[in-house]
Amino acid sequence: MKTDVTEIARGVHRIATFHPDFGIQFNQFLVTDDEPFLMHTGMRRMFQSTLAGVSQVMDPARLRWIGFSHFEPDECGALNEWLALAPQALAVCGFVGATVMLNDFAERPARVLADGEVLATGTHRLRYLATPHVPHGWDAGLLFEEGDRTLFCSDLFFQPGDPAPLTEADVAGPAGVAIREGAKGPLANDIPYTPYTDATLRRLAALEPRTLAVMHGSSFRGDGRRAILELAGVLGEVLGKAERR
Ligand SMILES: [Fe+2]
Ligand SMILES: [Fe+2]
Image 1 (cartoon, rainbow, N blue to C red):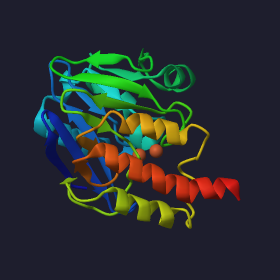
Image 2 (image 1 turned 60 degrees about the vertical axis):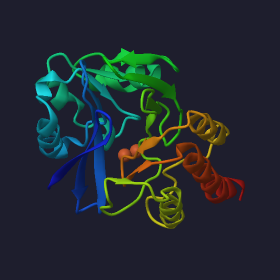
Image 3 (image 1 turned 60 degrees about the horizontal axis):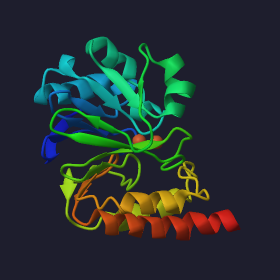
């Protein structure tokens, strides 16, 4: 599998691997800084591909922080491989992720971030936002790079296939199509529509991101607030209705 690396915002590198069996991209994001930060580890079985991508940018043994939005193999399956390779590396996540998942799964304890807490990596400041069940998982949380206003938005804005690294065109539209199509297939119900889904998305929109770093599909540069509100509208329409049936 080929891994492509693209700088999508200042010091933010998208490490993209298209997996033909799944027909989707798995994108990790490396923030180069005094204390380099990797958002998502990639799957354990894809570790060599992700490692090759990170190695194009820096010595992977320098990695200091590993963030992930929720406990699933593509988000953090290769965590222990990274902890073994980078002696200074620690995972960062919320209380639930650390207490319920990583305390057993990970070879080293995680650094716990409170909702709203900032992780300073040198020139970048990454704010942690607890987002339970958005996109999914009790432990879900996202990170927001405050300097360039980049939101690492995990599985939100999912687009299938192998699209361009970065687009300024509409991403909410293609993501909406994927949500509607996904609702008919065997992987339906990936995003639960809870009493706090809409409020969580509105909180993310209020950050006014300039770049949306998307885990599966093209990242987006432009009016992130508008794109998130459009996505919230689609989720309310498709999933909110399903909930009420
Ligand atoms: Fe996920
Ligand atoms: Fe994912």
